[in-house]
Image (cartoon, rainbow, N blue to C red; front, top):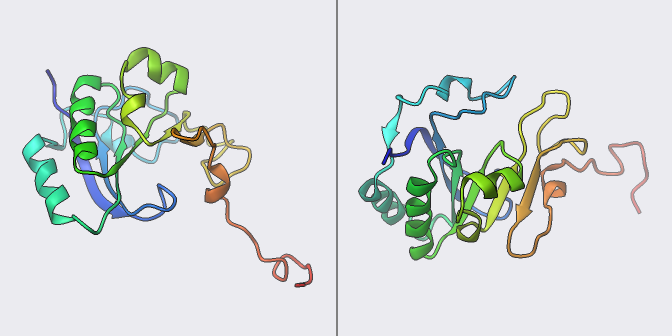
Length: 168
């Protein structure tokens, strides 16, 4: 079985609303969306292997500081991703997957991932539609426990006074 390799690891605050997340950006994405901000990670043979030991070490290091682990990709290796998701959940943390697949595609190619997730962002990147911060985006960020689409949390709200309105 191939392992997941990541090229970027960081703590993020905006990618999963209401959560402080340890994020891993995986290499080897087969989708190759035009305009992708991570095109440098398309090669499958780059990065560092996300082993169980490495992940456990990171979860221990950030215990009490993070509430979620965000996997940016990796669904193309579902068995390896399931193992890492299970380890995160066993540590009492939430899980999130960012994928360019639609939810129906994800369910058909990655049997068993959805029940291991708390949140999922779906949809290929289309420059004309923008990301989650654009109301016209095709991408969806969903709380899988409630089914609620949370895109509104990514859209910057302009205060009425700044938009030319009057404050009440």
